[in-house]
Length: 385
Image (tube, rainbow, N blue to C red):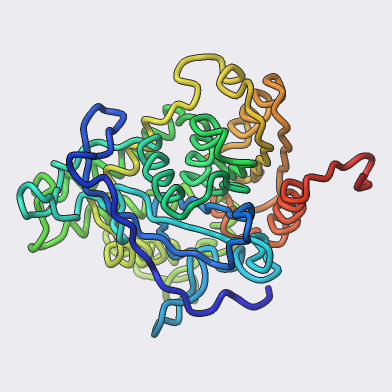
């Protein structure tokens, strides 16, 4: 990949000050609300080149570049920058932390103005619709009437679909990647295991653990379960096999020690996650994902009818967490509804993590799609007309 966007700074926008709180889908109110966001590239004079990147469950606003004094780039740095999939030489890229999160946007760990203490589980239930409505306030503040595109993988793809169906007049295109219009019972079940792991930790204390010992074991276990679903059987085999941690394939037998390499990896991932994520945010965000149902009980194609935006759906063959049939359902419904939709299925052994890793294939697809949307040209028999 080429150069990145360099040193970037997180910015903050606060809105929904009482008595003008945001009305949530549950009917409850939330305000004031702060949204953390970052921008990359330059907004053109007509404000027609803006792209909103939407993060997955554990992501945040820092999608590309470096923060001052840090040596780790943003979570999708290989996709955003000069000549990359989201080319900052051409486009103005925005990414914000979702409400309910813990990386600068208002969430359960934020101070409740009514009590002067962290919300904890007094934070109101949020949905993907609420997350997108809050993003819309940010886009209004930044002065863009219409986004060139909204794009994201996993939960980010869910947000892209919500933008597409709830605010189709505000976007020219959407790129939902490795996602679904609603969770299957299996997907809900996997999220519930993670939530129960957190709530079973005595330190969770009914969500009131701020300023005391964190529910580290519960959150670590939830993340371990998550990482199993992000990888494929083949990628685990290639990365770990049955290797023991001492490197020679032998070990003393133990019922309690993590002596396989894959066990050590899961512990490492779980322990690191505790350092950067809030357990209550995990509960709220996974529940928001589970509540999403783009069709709201109607035939899916009826939900997409009348939408003028172009859609690029990307899926990965080895993704068993968000299997390809869920992406195909989106494309089929779009086609029946008359929406201009393109489907691309990428061969990969990475499983669900492929949307973060298969950058060469994704870059080719996304760059071509965005060029088509931005320039407004049509393609006939492989030739621009």
